[in-house]
Length: 192
Ligand SMILES: [Zn+2]
Image 1 (cartoon, helix red, strand yellow):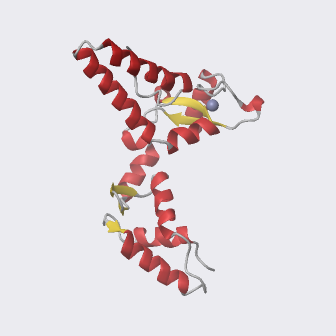
Image 2 (tube, protein in one colour; image 1 turned 90 degrees about the horizontal axis):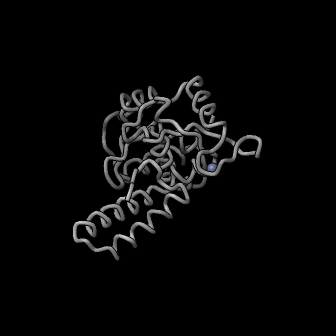
């Protein structure tokens, strides 16, 4: 049976636990394995690594460097919600996405999301859970840059406040209100 690119990447990291790897050695090994079973080179093995990182299997040590830490994976799995917790979160939120209010009766899938993400130390507690539709869940997971943006405007607001600069304070407050309006990064709290 041939192995997928994902399976080959996993095989590589599982056999080198807690070792840090750059692009080169992983892709070379995966490519060599792949070519023993296929005529054409594998398509974008690095993408499989990024996806495994997004799923929490691989740790990004720094830009372009990843490792597999079996204990971190086990700890992370401990922080998954149980099906009872998920049900409790959904029930509390009336089975509706807390951002757009849509639910299963609108034909959308709902997810129990960690408000504080697991990789930032968020726990599997009902208070750390919120109901999100598939779309808002996807946005939260994939547009982390918006967090940097929100934090920057919060810092800028505080700086302007310390200088009594109401013009820049209002400018930041308007932008932060847009974050609220769209429900982007609600876990980063800000009050004027
Ligand atoms: Zn939604």
